[in-house]
Every structure is written in C-alpha cells, then in structure tokens.
Length: 169
Image (cartoon, rainbow, N blue to C red; front, side):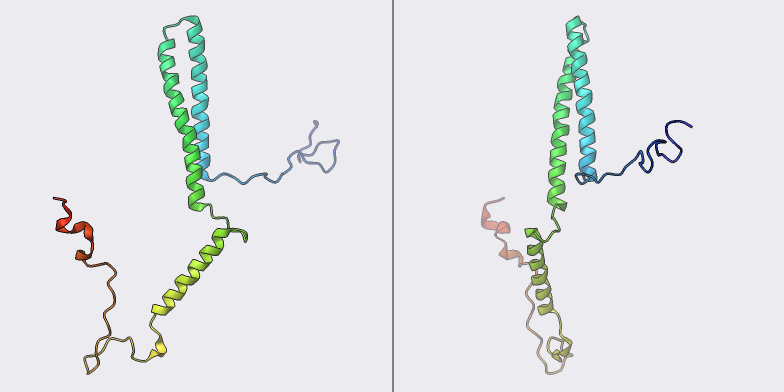
C-alpha cells in the first residue's frame, strides 16, 4: 500500500479527505457570458502568440515577418471585438434577466404594483355574472344595443403620417 489508501484518505491522517468541497465565492456566470469569455480568452491567447512570433521573425529578418505582422494587427482587432463581445453580452444579460429577486430590490415593488393595477383593470372590464342582462347582447326585442366599444386601433384618417397633404409623394 502506498501513501494514500483506496478510500482517498491519507494513511497517517485519519478522517481527512484529499478532496474537500468549498463554497463558491461568486455565483457562476450565465452561459452566454461564459461562452463569450472563453472565446475572448482563446482569441487573445492566439493573438499574443502570433505577436510574439512576429517579434522574433522581425529580429531574425525573415520574410514571414510582414505577413505575420499583418495577421497580428488583424488579430488585435478581432481580440478587441472579443473583449467587447464579453462586455456587451454581460450587459445584455443583466438588462434582460438581472432583476434581483430580493426584498431590497426596488424593481420588485414596482413589478408588484404593475401586476396589481393590471389585475384591477381586468376585473373592471370583466362581465359580472350577478349583473343580470346588463352587458349582454340583445336578442332582437325592444332592447337597445349597448354603446359601441372604442376601437383598439384609430381610424386611418386619424394618423397624420398618411395624409395626402404631408408633402410625401
């Protein structure tokens, strides 16, 4: 038997495992942000390697120095794009999914107020079963039809953009 036993415990230290779980210090990055970060790190690594090779080819006076220099310049542009992509993806993620669901979050109270107002407006427009025949469609007797509901879309003449006198051919 060697220094370690089969169960992962060192022979001399009882009860102490080789692998200990530690709580994460920060939360895991969202998948799109992590993908962009990995892509950016790979691009930057290749660009730095290319720049180093270009430097050494320039020192030796090789004819490959010029094409490698042009490639290193293009790689710098692409690496800059990669880093900006990480920042933009992170910002986009925070804007879409970044509402913190904690009691201290200001967005939570506003969202609750909007939901409450929306629910109240829905109950005002809903047909009440105890209201009798009010609000029902008349069956053709002596009853008059209810007032016309307002249109969801304004009539075509109400929009000034489409009038003939606007000067647009």
